[in-house]
Length: 304
Image: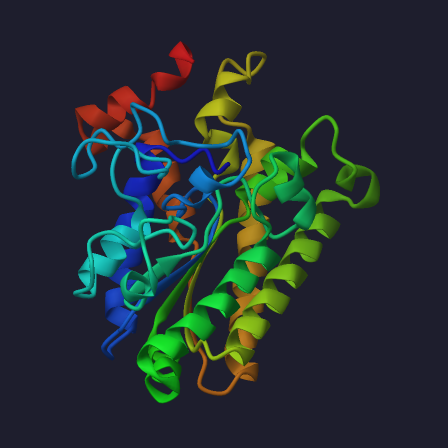
């Protein structure tokens, strides 16, 4: 489910805005989003899962003060990125019945909280697997072509900025869970390679379908996420270094895969963002340097 909180939203938003605005010079007609709770804008509201955020205090800082299905007190990173490119300030969820193709023409979110690269991860909490997110995208393409015409739709899909943010759940909700079958099938490094292969296949298919600009976000220091610290009683509620090491290694493999794809796929532009790991780590190590808010947030795990 990503365990997204104010800290992780803050650093992802800040880093992605800086990198993407700098790297993507051309006008972006739409923001198209795949991933987990770090970027889900409300798709889980309309599926049969316990993993929802359509209740307070979620959304208290969103326009109107109501929960939207975002796992956040306000907006999530795609919303800020969309606004930074001069588009709408909130990216609509594809499954939200209050929106239609006229809304999705400038931005759409297919993400589902709790999902991962591995289909087995989405089974844990009965959420939308990544392959199904891609099927929704194909359906979106058909609707877009019917709405604006084939030529314009092709241009929109080619020039749009695609965002991918997931991977944390594959480890925390799947591989490291007590009931996981993956631990008997893979060592953690083999599982990392398995996930990277799935990511590569997904991105290659997205390219085949017309996508040309992608931001791929790595995982944060998973051992420092609130639940992991709150349950690390024997470690005096400190970060779990083992999980952080896995995060760093996995990010390195994702980055290597991204670099390889950029060489292999003509005209493909990809930004891999692993800086989020470093920023989050700095905030955890020295929260006072980021103000009273982050000092307080660094202590929240004691009250969980």
